[in-house]
Image 1: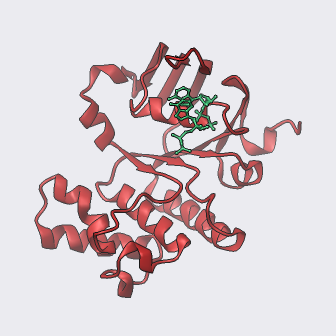
Image 2: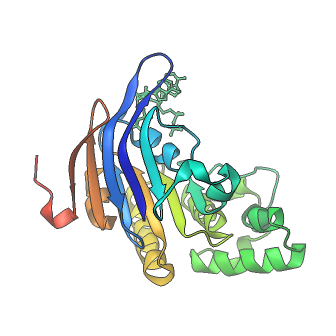
Image 3: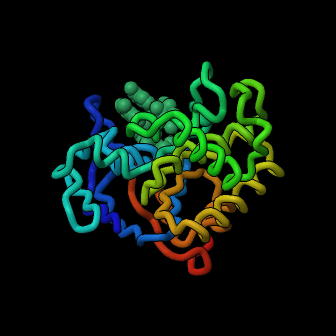
Amino acid sequence: MIRIDSVTKRYPDGTVAVDRLSLEIPDRSITVLVGPSGCGKTTTLRMINRMVEPSEGTILIDGKDSRQQPVNTLRRSMGYVIQNAGLFQHRTIVDNIATVPRMLGWGKEKARARARELMERVGLDGSLAKRYPYQLSGGQQQRVGVARALAADPPVLLMDEPFSAVDPIVRKGLQDELLRIQDELGKTIVFVTHDIDEAVKIGTMVAVMRTGGKLAQYAPPAELLSN
Ligand code: ADP
Ligand code: ADP
């Protein structure tokens, strides 16, 4: 479990991005952080993998202060997916996905075999393996981003507006795919979006944040107050 315990982030210019936030993120759930632009969602996500350090408060991973483990170990246990996939433009699809296993010391063929297996898992046709990112649609690129984040089989996936740049129909397909993956693999997913409909559709738990980085509500979708 990830426990965010009274965490505040104040950037050097004085901006309070997150204000005394406390959240318990259950294992094997999709916990969605939702709220207007600038309310501190990305900052919260980045504090979980220590791309941003909290100014106050503690983040506990399975009961242990996240600062107690080496940052590389922490990040290896957390796949990260961003809005425009952030793919390596000069690597083929299969090699994009194989990047992390390669970094972990896997041989090229083993890493590629793993990548092909993941392509299938995220609904990408194997014929796309040797293409480059620019030859794929936005929705396909996001699938590659998800596959790459899953490559080292991390228990946690951090997803920052992963489906926001694709059209509504493709987006619905990606949401369904994520629910299926979650069901099959049981990852702990923290998912950032500004779209309340998306939050309600995919969230096991929904954390509604408001401007100033405060938590307004934290509940399963069916129990969210409608205002
Ligand atoms: P993302 O890629 O998740 O959208 P960004 O790094 O682009 O995140 O920034 C998210 C928000 O933080 C944006 O509103 C951006 O304007 C703001 N931001 C990012 N860096 C700075 C900075 N150095 N100073 C002020 N605001 C920033
Ligand atoms: P969200 O993801 O909800 O859009 P962010 O976490 O990106 O919100 O940003 C929260 C607040 O912190 C915003 O006011 C943003 O401009 C500010 N911010 C984000 N990154 C920085 C930064 N590096 N320096 C200063 N302010 C920042």
